[in-house]
Amino acid sequence: MKHFLNILLSLFLLPSLAHAGEETETFSQWGGHLRATGSVVWPASETALRAVDSGPLYDGVLEFRLKNRFVLDENIRLDSHYEMIPAGGDSWRAASELRRLPDSLPGLGCAIPSDDHRFFDFTSSLSEKDDR
Image 1 (tube, rainbow, N blue to C red):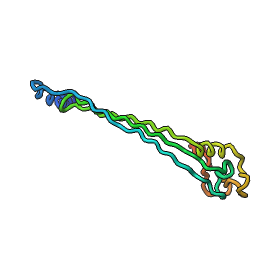
Image 2: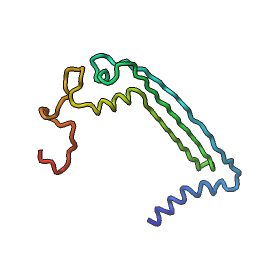
Image 3: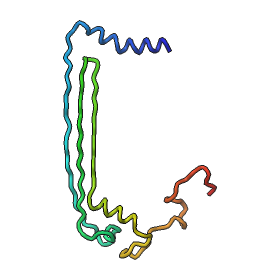
């Protein structure tokens, strides 16, 4: 372990000691972008969204990305990125309302499929204690 630490320290310290007599410039670069995207969806009559909202569904996404490059030495550089993407709108609201509806959706003439008659169970979680 001692030899490993010596090798690791020599990899990082020797290049910077070699340039100790030279003058290096420390600088920082900033960049990034801000992007806004919008969409409009008209749900078709045979879709489940039509049972919740029949009008156009307006959605929006805002993407913010900030990038920074900090150079301390020729061999020491730090790149950092930060990204935030809030999204929302009418189709998000309609989807959450759809989850609150009972199993039989009015207007569609069909019920949500049940896993009772299927080979695989897609709605429950498996655990080690299940004997099925």
